[in-house]
Amino acid sequence: MRTSTLSVTFFALFCGLMLSSTSVSASVTTSLAGPPSPKETPPAFGISAGLSKSFSLVDHKDGDRQETNDLEVIPSYNWSFGKTLAVFTFSDDVRDPGNSDMGDIALATSFNGWDFKSFKLRPSVTIVLPQSKESRINTNLQTAISGKLSASIQEKLLLPGFRFGGSVSFNRNFHRYETALDGTVLKQYSSKQGLSGGYSIGLFSFDLDFTHINAWTYQGNMKESYEHSEEASVEIGRNFAFTLGHTNGGSVFKEDGYSSNYKLIDEENSLVYAKVSMQY
Image (cartoon, rainbow, N blue to C red):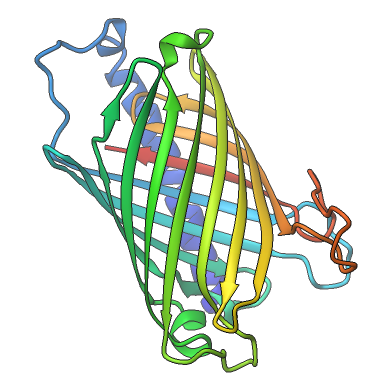
């Protein structure tokens, strides 16, 4: 009964967003005719939300296929020095309702940074508040703090419509114990190095992201992993968008410790997803 109710709720939200986008598109046609006035400033408060469905790329018919409905809500506030936002998520596990859970809450502040002739630099800080069952019960996470520096090439130096950038971050986890309840040795530090690129033409946009991850356990052992994603999006009016995407990740090396394990598509780990999002 719980899974059925959640699925109906997600479906209703999805339909509501799509119907709303139709009326919004009609109402903003005249405003899309030209750029906003230079005196126009963005509102201090903003909010974005996304509703998505993801599932395993390959169904092996063995009962292990992943399938979730995911909701993300991000309220934000613009300061003179930057922007602060909070990320709230909930995942409904269609295959195993017992795994449905709220995600950890992330509080992030990005700063205006610096604009140079060839590139931009933007620092940010994130604090994690543990809310998921995995963090509160299994790993006993108390909090996590990370700092990030993002760099992007000035778009005027690239071909029209293209964008390219990179980032590096460092994270510190604070756990009550060094080992999880399931016996896993926990990660104390981690660092992410990412590259991203994209192209926009009219209402359509295409994005690629790759992230390399180093993690160090409390016992000093290092683990390396990677994540990548590919997305194609279309704007629906001024405030809505629809996205199709694929994501995959895993260990950098195979079990022998030196053979490369990088894969664009993995029958075991690849996920595909569809997402409708709105922003005000």
